Image (cartoon, rainbow, N blue to C red; front, side, top):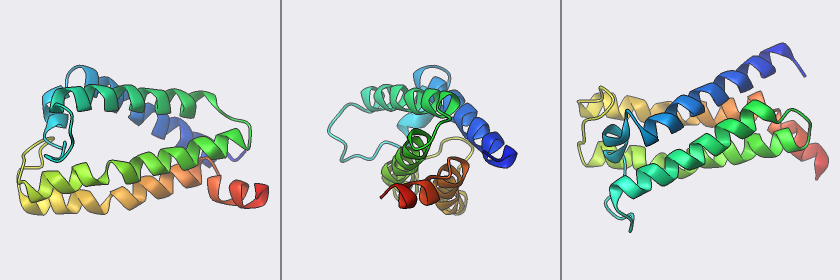
Length: 135
């Protein structure tokens, strides 16, 4: 396991730990701005549930080091980043301010980082190569 991949996985896990904690505590209201109107649950409930999910992914990233489980965690994390993309899009289309994103330009630029998060999860866990080899 390369040092760069290890550092990338630890960093991503740490970011998700902070984000998940934020969902449950200090950033709850900010995260509600990202919940699309079509989600059938109350916005606060959605934020709380997604915080628990993010904490679960953080824990998995911070504790799973053997392949192929590590790659599965990376692929699942990438899928999580794909799944939350509609929330980021809703923040733009509904013109909702949160996390310092107070203009449509800032919100649109934020969308460009989602593919980077997906790539980060796949790279850090060597998911693409490992899962291709396993199949």
